[in-house]
Each structure stands twice: as structure tokens, then as C-alpha cells.
Length: 309
Image (cartoon, rainbow, N blue to C red; front, side, top):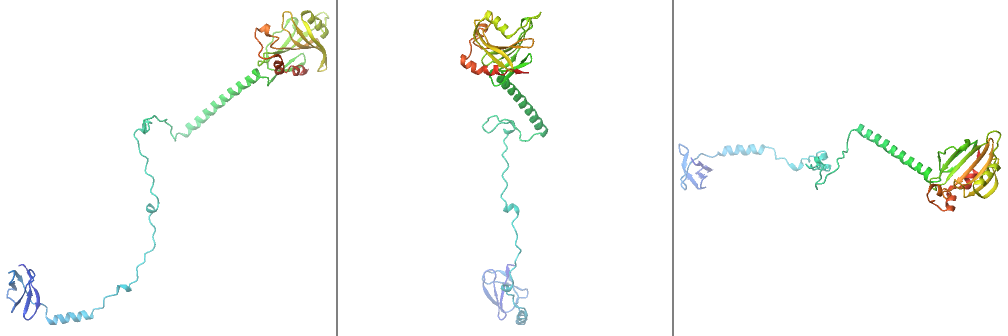
């Protein structure tokens, strides 16, 4: 069966072929309800259409139905405002750092070896490193300070050394040096100025035995027998009366400039020997001229520093 004819009218009965749309008429319905289209010869089931009473009933039912609603009168639906999710409003996170297989071996992209310094680490290790570093810095600082102090004391005249002997004291630029005791029980103490090479001394000569008394005048008489006294004048230091002198052509010793005072039990000598005076004894040439050497040694201050201990 090819299809169903479209019913068009009741009298005469007219049908439309669904296959070729041919319209044809039948006087009566075939008993088996089948008909053949005279145009395309299709066999199609046919039947009577709805009656007029049925159509009137349907029209009445349709008239009683309510009118279609006017959708324009329906209020608009309002949804509460919403905010976009955080992942839409915030900027995207930065991409993860690119992993380079060479980084784990400490090699950068250019093939150069990088220093392996970790940003983290054990806090205890850091504290120990700071402590060790601090002690090392302190140790080096002490060494540097000691070296500077040694240089200041030995190579410059910034610092003075103090000499004490027979109840009196003096000060001279330089450092104390060991001086051998002389003959007849005399005592000596000395200071060497390493910058100029000059030296300063205090010498105590005790009285001779059996009532022999040594005074400043007696000492000057004996000195005149061994050297030429080029300068001599009386001085007073620390309440002591004495003689200031200079020598030349000293026999068996270096020339000197000094002062001699009579003290209890003997005489006290305060002596200055410049590097020029010691050239013959040492075999070394003086570093400075006589004037600059005397200025650096502060000779006048040395003699004026004599005072009771």
C-alpha cells in the first residue's frame, strides 16, 4: 500500500493522491477501503472525511476555549546581580618556571658553570657560619691593629716610651730596648727610635767605695780626658742642678749630647746619641739630615721631660 488519499469533499467523494497529487472522484467507497489512483496507479487506502456535525461540534468546542494569552503582558523576569568567579576577574597566575635539565648540574643555558648557592639552608648552619666568620674577622682585625700599633711604636715618633732610673723618669719617642749594665755597678735603660735610628739613655753611676763621691763636676773632668767637650752650660731639671754638654772625637765610644746631675749615691746621666753620632759604631748611614733628625727625635722635649718618679 503506497499511502492514504487526502479526503477533499463528501458528495461526490473526492480524494487527492498523496503520491502524485492527482484529484479524482468516487461514487461510493470500495468495500475493502482501497482505491487505485488513475494517474500513477498507486493503490492507496481511502475513507470518508469528518461529517458536518462533527465539524460543528469541533467549532463549538473551539469557540468555548479561552483566548490565547498575551505574552507581552507577562512581566520580565529579573535575576539578582551576580559577580564573575575569581578565576575570571583576577589575572592569570604566572606560568611555572621552565625546567632545564642542565640546571640540576649547575650549568646555565650557555653551558657555563654556575656557582651552587642555595637560597635556603639550615638556620643552624647559617648561625655557625656567621659566628665563625665573625671570629675570623675579629682575629684578622686584631692582627691588623697589632701590626699598626707595632709600626706606630717602632717606625714613627707618635708614641713615647718612658724610662725610669734612680728615682727619676724621662720619655722619648720610640720603644724600650735592653741595655747591658756597665762596669763599676752602673745601671742603664734605653729607648730606640726606629724611624731615625737615634737612641736615648738614662745612666746611673754610683759612688766609688771607701768614701769616694762622684759628682757632676767630677764626671765632667773625667769626660774631658776622653773627648773634646764642644758645648757646656749649667741647667736645672726637676729641682736638680746639672751640666748640659756635647762631645766630639770620643775615644773608644760614640759622641753624645747629654746632661749630668748629682743625685743621692752617685750621678745621673741623661744622654742622646743621634744616628749621625752612631754611624761609625754601626757602619750605617743616617736616614735623615741632622736638622730633620733632631726635629723627629724631639731632643729638647726629651731633656725637659726629666722629673721625679
